[in-house]
Length: 245
Length: 224
Image (tube, rainbow over all chains, first blue to last red; front, side, top):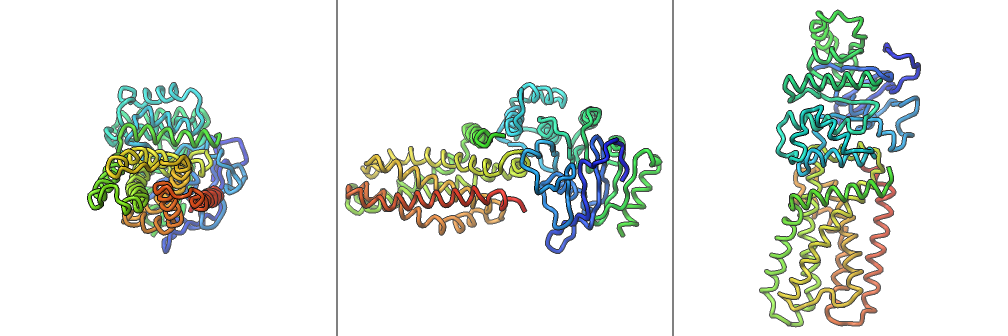
């Protein structure tokens, strides 16, 4: 895999990764190197193994076989503190309906030992247009607002690696635009972004490397600079359908 | 992050949520009060039988209403995927577990504090008739919260969680329930407190063994 970074050691290295759920093989001998500051977008049809790959990389799920290294250290040898580097936006919001937006951010901020948590939470809520609702219970929020509070929660501790699983789901165009700006800001701060999405335009816009998965395998891995963006939709259809078939 | 700071953060969050929603306390309390009142109707006030089974009624009320509470608290972690988010946090996973144990224990203690005067009203029995009873209450409640939290984490992911939790929990709880009921009855009946020592020791040993085992293996068993 190509790298846009000068560092030689991958930040994350996945080798011959297999993940099996019962009779279903979700990942089939996947190899992937991710470097600091890289922005990877993973595309693929439903059931291709994108979310599984994201869960493996973010240590939410364990590999059945193969190895996962962070800075050349096997993940099993890392202590709990290493998770401080991760910010995860999942299908689920990871927030408590019985707490307000600010209370949720303060709670997760405390767990991540964030200093000036209230200040950081206010800043994020302002960026995501939720500040006026900061004292409202999260259970009163709409789907789009839940997604925005979920983004704020994932970024409250300024993680080095941001994992996003369909982050644009439920967001209107204005909120989508704000999220893209927020993510580009993170990239300019040399943060690493790994995103799963079905939105080809937005996903391609943020990426410097594009992966396409199908049936548990990475069937396409290319730098964005090497892609003819006008033809990407066709490339996606050909790769995802034909190579996976 | 500091182990105890993480533990305290979990407890603080649970207390805040409970103060706001009162979901756990309300569900448990209504059931416990109804149970105590209904049993008071079937016995003659001040009878010897009442004294012999009062300890059983007290702990039955705590146990069964506690099961309702345990299910509710764990549901709040499951909704919205919060449990996964907690597992992602850079803290020792057992700190999260013991934070939940303390939160559940606080709810059970509140329940007991409300039940004690009810026993005075409906049964004319003082549950805390001897200072050692406070130790019994503390040790048995901790043991119940400890094992209850563990099994509620397992059962809450099943479809029949309301049935699964008592099925898993009650057989394990038998030693602690017998010890708590019999030592409570010793204090209520005014028998020599020396007979309660072994029951109290049994409860303490149960608590120590389960605390040590869960502390040692929780991180491993909670991961896949």
